[in-house]
Image (tube, rainbow over all chains, first blue to last red; front, side, top):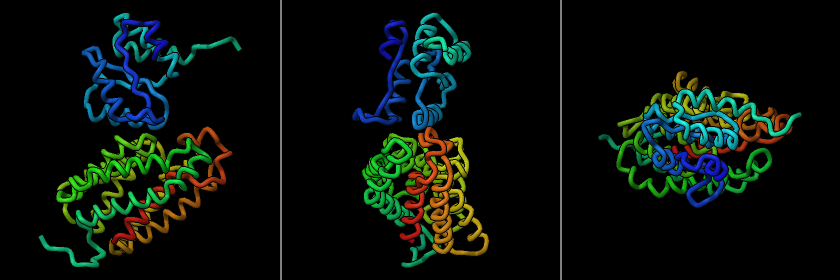
Length: 111
Length: 217
């Protein structure tokens, strides 16, 4: 989140990690509030870890009944930086969904 | 409305459902350390803690639902689990209870056939939410055999309690079966073959829930 903010200081970002009391876990309330915080007509993308983060986000989105909120499957850190940079460049939700797949192939060092 | 006769083992009303939810919450408290220990072996070691956190939140709200219908009570239970558990069991059990609640919407007393329909929706909900099926070392390895045994028993004319006894027996066998297979879903899937020999914590908590339902009837 902080790295993403550093590379794209004007991107609307919100973090929703952990439970309300700071414990490890996924919070429906935090995810829902984070989506509302950055929501605009352009839409919102949600990046997440596996397991409860995926399933809880699904339920939050189903409850909001809004097609402009989308979950993206990508490496969390690399994807977050890419999404933050791209979202300040006026990219559409659809194009970002395609673009984010590039983060699958980001290599940290040559093998 | 006709009052249920004491000891009626084929009907279940809102008060009885509230009693069941209380019994499940108490059981999770009792089994907290055991579930966490099972989860420590193959997962992230929080299952017992998460289930207790979730059902404590359910207990806080239960009095608000006791005078309503069974559907609303189950739906509320599911929403509290989704909002408070914190781990994967939250959205999974939450979906199960919410789906069951949808099926029983507006009903203040149910019998075996209604319970079968609710169980079907609950198990289907877990499969969809977890994108999982039987044999992946998850709660479905207890729930699917239980659902099958229950449906067959009801079709053969069993009353609610008798059918649930068969469902519990099938879930027990399912929990044993989880020791023999490798996990392909959830955190335990990182361990692959090394998860063999360990009992799945989610299947275990599902068994505890079914046992409490059966005991209360």
